[in-house]
Every structure is written in structure tokens, then in C-alpha cells.
Image 1 (cartoon, protein in one colour):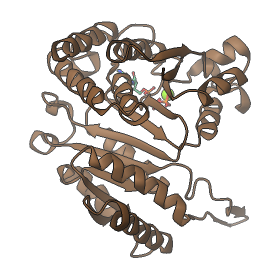
Image 2: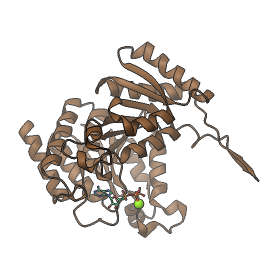
Image 3: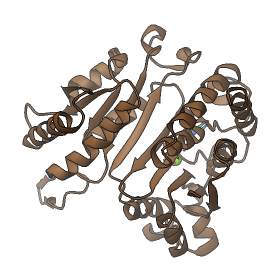
Image 4: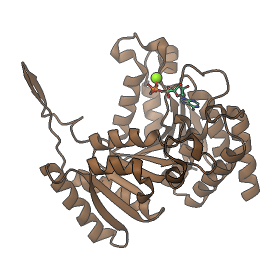
Length: 346
Ligand code: ATP
Ligand code: MG
């Protein structure tokens, strides 16, 4: 029996997580669910954001579903007693090296996108960001008086493993990968480009592959986003491109994410704890529900069930938009509409 550890977290986290778990129970009743306090909730209950018993539980699980963490209540705590510190430790303990963010403009919601409707219409891109390497983690860093430097370093195996995730994901989509780099000026990008190409030629030759420079990709994501299926890129470029892409659907509440390594994956909506709307029952649970979809696809290897969840969410969004989309539907009611749509397609 697969085991999923659920970490509802703080703010709207518990609300959207409850909605997502209701969907998970509907489509995968055999899954065993174990819930733990995490982040601010764990600081309050156990005096630390990522207690040892939670670490043990996630490492023994098949996947982790996270709500959101943090909030003003813990903002002035010392660093080791902040929810964000717990999240960094959780990601580190899982060794998740690939961050996947699908970005879609949903049918009927084109007018919520900052793009013109005719451009917004076909946005359906998955950004795969390398998460453990590059400038953010390279130990070769220094600030020294009036000079400072950081280093972007990658090894061939680090590129290979994230490239494989991208190609594998593309095979379940439109089978096209765009690798984004800056190979005209950076040696590390030369290695990146050559390695992605080698993985492609040896293991995924039937998947379309092209290479783009990051500056050009940033522009094209806004002017011609429908050219993309899967984008794979290094940590810093991916950080910037995925936030750029996140504004395209029109609400932060719509998007899921998956962070994958060689052990259990971490699945969470991209939005934060949204303290301004917490406790009101109005948060959009779409990002959390679609995170369950990604969990079914990537952790439990049930793509057909994942597709059913995606379709049910698309249907519910069209007919029952939540507050952030100008509608009236509350968090729990939206989950009920998704479950209704699932039953119709079951
Ligand atoms: P973090 O907590 O990671 O710092 P943040 O502060 O950037 O995140 P959020 O907490 O996600 O951002 O909130 C940003 C805005 O988006 C807020 O106004 C919030 O109410 C809104 N928002 C975020 N998530 C949702 C959601 N699921 N449904 C509706 N509105 C949301
Ligand atoms: Mg915030």
C-alpha cells in the first residue's frame, strides 16, 4: 500500500490540503495517508519546524504532499526557529534535484492572463529547473572588500539526471524538450548543452530537442509561449523563468509543483501561506489538487488517474471559478465540484 505523508503547514495550507486530500482519497482509496505538523504549526506544537519524527515519516514514505508554510507569527523568530528553515531542511533531506512547474492558461480563463487572449490560449509549458546545483549551492563563493564572486558549476552527472526527468516528462506530454542555457558566453552552459544532447541521442532520440539562450527564452515565453512543451534549465535561470511563467495563468492559486529526487518526491502548490485570506475558506485549492495529480503521475506512476484529475479540475474551473478568479466558489465547494466531475468521468 503506497504511503503519502501530508504536511498541511500554515495559513491557507491546511485548507487547500484538506481539499486536495479529499480528491486523493476519491481517486486512490488504497493510498495510506499520514499527517504531520510542519513549519510554523510544528514550531507551535513541538518547538521546531521539522521534528525528527516528521523526517523519519517522510523518508519512509512514497511521496510528500505539502500545503504552505510560514506567516507573520514566526517572522521574527531566530533563523533555526523559522518555518522556511524547516522547508529547506525538508528539501535537503529528500535530495530533490529537479523542480517541475507546469504552467497552463486554463480554457475559459484566458481573460485572467496578462497576455492577450489569442496568445494566452495555448500556454501549456512544464518548466524543469535543476534545484541542487549552480550558483546557489556552489562552495566557490566569496565577498572580499570591494570584490565578490559566485560560481556556476555543474558536473556531467548533475546535468544527466535532471535531463532524464525532463525527457521522461516530455514523453507524457507533447514530446518536445527545449534546453535553455547561455552557451554563447558560458563554459558551464557548453557542458550543459553537450550533456543534454548526449542523453537525448542515447536514450530519448524520439523526443524533439532544441536549445535556446535564456535571454531569448524569457522573451519568447511572453510573446510566443505556445512554442514550448518542456523547458529544462539550470537553477538560477530556472528560478527566474519559472517566476516569469507563474504570472501567465492569472492567479498564484492555480499552479502545482513537484520536486523530484531518487527517493520520495515533494508535491506542493507554488503559492505561499497567503495569511491575508487564511481561515476564510476562500483560497483556491487548484494548485494543491493539481499537486496531487503530479504525485499520482510521478510518485505513484498512475498517469491515467493523473489525467483524470487534470480534466476534472479544468472542467470545475470553467464552471465554478473561485474568488481569485472573480467567482464565488469556496475552497471546500471547489473540491466537491472536482470530485463530482471525477465521478462523471470514472
Ligand atoms: P510566501 O509565503 O512563499 O512568501 P508570497 O508571500 O509570495 O508567498 P502568497 O502567500 O502566496 O505569496 O500570497 C500572495 C498573494 O496571492 C496574496 O494576496 C494571496 O492572498 C494570494 N494567494 C496565494 N495563494 C492563493 C490561493 N490559493 N487562492 C487565492 N489567492 C491566493
Ligand atoms: Mg508570504
